[in-house]
Image (cartoon, rainbow, N blue to C red):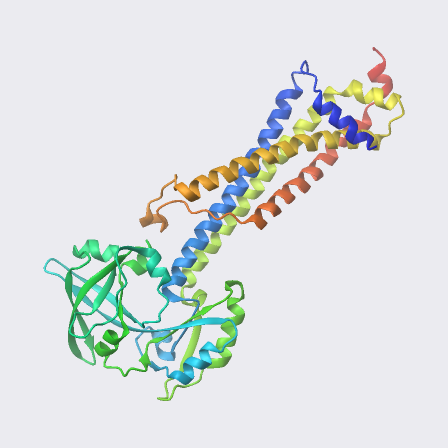
Length: 415
């Protein structure tokens, strides 16, 4: 039989209700552990949710890796590259690449009777992955396929629609400058999307690729570039290096130099900003660990002081210092486990409520999302719980040594 565990369980089960000092101390320790653990779990879930929500939106607009003309990525001017079946097969054969989407871009102006707005019109192919756009669609549909004799369709953002007072079904004129000539197109608004990423929503529209190629006077195999999707974001850097070795500094059949870059290189400022959030998480975790440690240490010391006579009796009966220390360590772990249980319960309940009901709302103009996003990562939660458990054991070792300094002679002298 494990004697320290037996003694600790008896002490915890039959706590002396007359000891008024230890009861608040134990409750405070339990509350400190519960609050500290809950705040750590909620903070991690919110930061992960926010980072991944913004990251997925950025990737939705630019995919994981882009292959384009060398001059396009160097000075942001729109130069075409020729992507024939041969080059597309090469891109599809790269390890880690799951999809290749082609696009062509034209820059112009949308004009209504009331106002005008500079836009970037992105033409996409029929087999382009539009899952992100479908998730972001707030009105209309993505019927972009150009039909003979009909006006080309255009999907605009909610920001553009509000500024130009447009809605689905409306028609609007767009003016483009290509090769020194002004080209006019009349579009029908087929859909409206909203991502709350102002950098994209303010200018980006979508249409069929034949329209943008016609505006730019390009051939059918000329595109601004190809967007590559990978099967594992964690291995993006490795896949990106493979793409670099495969296509960088190579030329298409018209002599255009190809170059590639991944999404982190395309938008370094946005991802650097997201990485700064990790620092906030570490600060919160350290502070909450400190709160829990102080609560546990103070609670255990009070428990030891209130059981001085009990310790003296055990020593008089021949109990070793190790047995007494382990008894109080077990005793303390009971209320630590209780605090961890309530901390996990509260954290998971609040996170699930936020995830499915969006209780806490945000201003999308400032935070890029309309409500606080959360992401429950089971592995991370387990690691935080294990770390809390191990740290609790470590911080209880030192105060447990006070029990070994108790003299049985002094404690039993006046019994």
